[in-house]
Image 1 (spheres, rainbow over the protein chains, first blue to last red):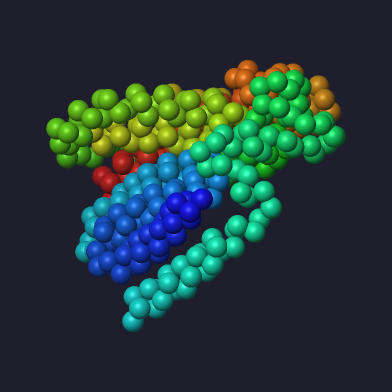
Image 2: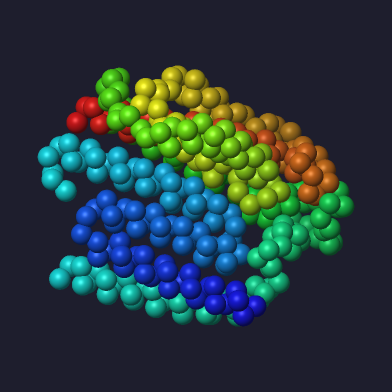
Length: 84
Length: 247
């Protein structure tokens, strides 16, 4: 039980850390990568909170498809001359 | 200044999250669910319409929904009508994306991908596809279901798009599968209406809890949802990749 508790605290601190990194980072692409890593930490948090269904969905959608959609839209914006 | 404000907001939410995590220990029954154990075995007892006594994994026959996964029995049985609405919302989103940016049929020439990605995609693609199909066919037994399974199928096609610069899907088959799956969901609901008297009723025998062929129409509905979500998100992905040429 003690190990799980330490794990829960570690995952929570990682969540806050990656969220901060995503907010502070200068380039948008870096922020997207940090968001993807944040989703992976959220997967661990959901699994620790006994919600495996949500964890599976978050792993596929949060860190896979949403990242693709963000990257595709940023490349589209670049082409339109926004200079991001 | 904006970044300082945003960072402060993140830290505030983080503190709320940490306080919330330390409070979850007070929820009744929270400690009973082992992380390493099967959640299905710990939380299998559920009675909504009638008192059916204790339900034992792998032994009880003709339980109320017959699904070992509690979340699935809510999503695909008790609140199946909500799920029909949810699938409709996703369908409208896919239609909107293809109407807005899917018009120009030309595909952009993508960059040639690296050797590692090309070789690995050939190995990982079938594994991802089979895992997606496994997730939605076993939705009534293990965590997961139609939505994550379908999304996993779509992301396996995304992997193919990234690995091969000449790869292009013929979307007409996917659109056909999507339409057929959506109609089948409504037809399954209508069959319940005619047989049992209310829409989306679980009219098939539910069998033994915990076996693959159990839970009546729940696995059928989840396979339908998985095919529908998979083809819809694959359509969105190829539309977004096509879009880059028209801008």
